[in-house]
Amino acid sequence: MLCTLNCTSLVVVTLMAISEYKYLSAEQRAQFLEQGWVKIPQAVPPENIARFTEDVWIRLGFDPNDKATWTKEKIHMPRHREIPTKDFMPKAWGAMCELLGGDERIDKTLFESCGDSLIVNLGTEEWEDVDPKDLGNWHMFTHFLDSGEQGLTVIVLFNDIKPRAGGTYIAPDGISNVIQWLYEHPEGADVFAQDPDGSRSICSIQSCTNFVELTGEAGDVVLLHPFMPHSASKNHLRIPRFITNPPVTLKEPFNLNRENPLDYSLVEQKTLRILGVNSLPDWHIKGERRRFTPRTRAGKDAMIMEEVARMKAHALKTGRPVDSMHLNGPVPYQVVIG
Image (cartoon, rainbow, N blue to C red; front, side):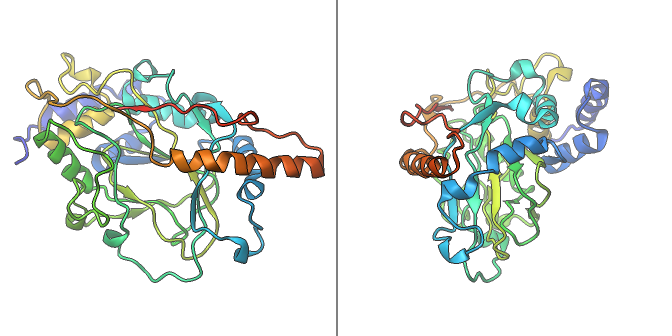
């Protein structure tokens, strides 16, 4: 059962903190507290989008004008270049800091940059329409109710994404399912132990009724509550879709029992509101915080050298230098703290 609701003081917290916000409007804050997500339009300068996409087809080894060469539907590309997050997308960085309670809470030594590790969805020749519940890839990334390894789920759009063109689907009402499950299971969850259709996972996606297809323009950034269930979708239009999911990690776990209610971040407020409480003084994890390597890493190591070879071959033809951190082999990868 959900905790007894007492939302009066929670509303006061939000209203009293209004003067502290410079990047998120009142409407955006209200949407985040209600739906668990917000879009920051034109958050990435066009020159940064251009730099990270200028050689994407060379790296892929596909002809952008010949779909017959698109031999894979979805590709998680490795990173060759990076820019500090606050410089890559300053508007989004400001919004991220406000959602998380200030930049001093963010670990800038871990995943402090955005890179060109594009997530590509090229679609296939034919897809039948699929009910969002049946997309088969519903998930979220966290271990415990207070885990800070994924302070937000961040989606950066590198090209215009139209409806039915592979935009990420989210289930805002599924946040409640995740939060309630994690509250009742202080031993935590295995973030990769999701059933294929999500029906018996902690997302309980089959009980959800609110589904949103994230569309937008190149440079838009969507910021999601870390407990937001999300899923890849089908690219019916076969317009190449390019996004990234740069992580943002906190120095400490979320604090759901702060002495001063004004210190709660918007993410923490959303979690507490769903549980119907102002704090959780007696809730503590009953498991060990873990480290894990993202599951796409093994495949990316193999792709790095393939992409570097294509980039070198292109450089020989054009005289342009190869812009990659991997010229001397794959760079060691950081693990995520759970």
